[in-house]
Length: 374
Image 1 (tube, one colour):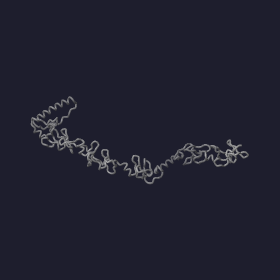
Image 2 (image 1 turned 30 degrees about the horizontal axis):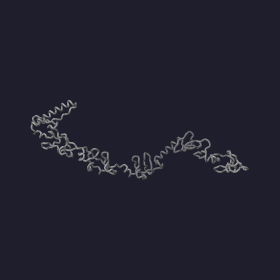
Image 3 (image 1 turned 90 degrees about the vertical axis):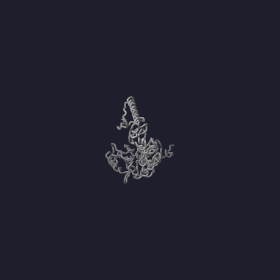
Image 4 (image 1 turned 135 degrees about the horizontal axis):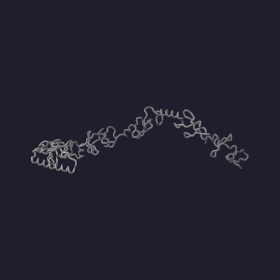
């Protein structure tokens, strides 16, 4: 008994068809897809299915991307698909592309048309949003050299949709309010952000009310002293730098007189004999004490002579030491022409307490003055 490959019933005595090595009832031999008979007897087999030409082409054969009809014979492989040779044409001028093509917006063009559409696109996109490709009404939002609708972006901090007034900082976009927060400096004093007036000084930023002495917190009247990276008032600057008067031992405020190897308040460098101020004047260094020329002239002649003789001895010793131990000559200090007594002249050299005359020190400021800039 021979059974039909479709209905599995006996084919004896019934019209049958032998195909593909199998036996079918005449009424069972139909297209697996459309269930229609094969009018001209032509059929296709695919993965165990028997198909008519239309269904085979529709389901399994290659189709032209342009005309969507099945491709039977030569084809052109391009742009991720297949074309009939006659269907592969320039999108703009419809000329068949036989010897190559140029792609634009995933469409084929001849070279001439390609250059034209590129120029046209550039002209259109010059005023269009680079994200949505739509025209921009009003002022465009410029971001990294391109134009956009601002509403395509969100603020980095508040996540709100941005407008044309948004700003960029360090590659990030902010609304106007958050841009101020993102760029505001932090006060070195209170560590809070500064909005409004700011004092920039010593590489740091301050609220005006927080720019004060690092020791006593007193505010500066535009003038401050810098020491070891800190801003100080004059009192604490003198204290920090050890600028104390050799007479009163207090921190020197105001002008500083440097004389006799010490520093003095301007009104404390006085003659030992008459208490006259010697700031900027000639003075004698007598056993470590300053003395004015008038008081020096009233010293006994023997004392003045002894002091000057001792000075000459020390000068000779120093000259011999310089000659032996150093090739560098010390510049002599100027000698005053006024005779003090018995042919003894005053000298500005002060040598180990010998009573010689010198100028009464130089005036110096107690520190480097800085200004707090706003």
